[in-house]
Amino acid sequence: MTVTIPAGMAESLTLSGYLDAIPYKVELNTDGGAITDPAYKTETANQKYTREYTVTTATFRLPTPQKNNYTFNGWKKNNTGTANKTVDITKGTTEDRSYTADWTENNATLSFAAQAGGSVSPTSATISVVSGSASSTATADKDYKFTGWYDGATKITETSTSKNVYVSGTKLTVKGSSSAPLKAKTYTAHFEPIPYTITLNLHGGGTRPTTSTGLSSGVTIECSGDGFITYNVKSDAFTVVSR
Image 1 (cartoon, rainbow, N blue to C red):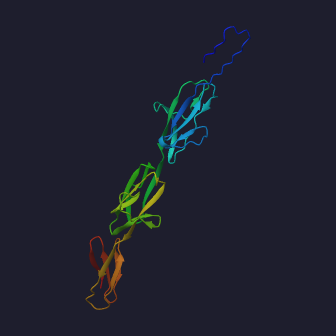
Image 2 (image 1 turned 45 degrees about the vertical axis):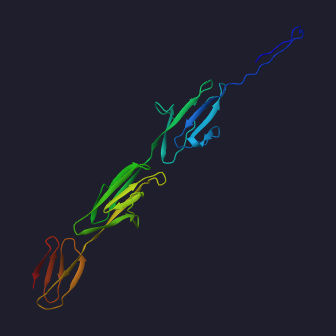
Image 3 (image 1 turned 90 degrees about the vertical axis):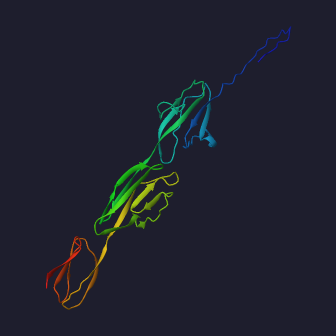
């Protein structure tokens, strides 16, 4: 600013000058997180928050952002180095600052269980809730058959791999997404005994019975008029016990 004093001016003159402090800016890139501190302006398009300060601004601390399904590790200056949760902009700072939020995706533990008559592998998996996926395969015991994977009392019938939970044969796959993050849950494989039909020809008279039952080791069937007959599922053979 230039002040011109007229020549020959005899009066005393007092001049006062006013200076504005230079504004600086701290820019926070939250990487999808949110900041609720009203001191920060929101730049929704690039997920950034800004706050202005000057050399005379009192010391202030960077806020803690929130992001669903993630844990905040801290701020990285210029997106490099170690993340720090406590970052202060001290009074007297005379430069623009830029910080980027560092996150760790949360985990969830999925459990895979089997009803009597079979097994599953693996029985559990701890994975990231948004980007993680896990699978488990059911195997039926001898004389049992697999009947499906269940989420509680609901049978899982989805087969499309684009879904978050789907089955392919005896294999169950569970995966997370931003719209459907995973939570701790137990999925159960169901099995049932294989039904066998046994027809007995008594040859000696009496009633000819037919029985259908789930057999797992061996069964004795009483036949009126012709003694006892056992059926062994392992050897798939009839044995006459008595006549």
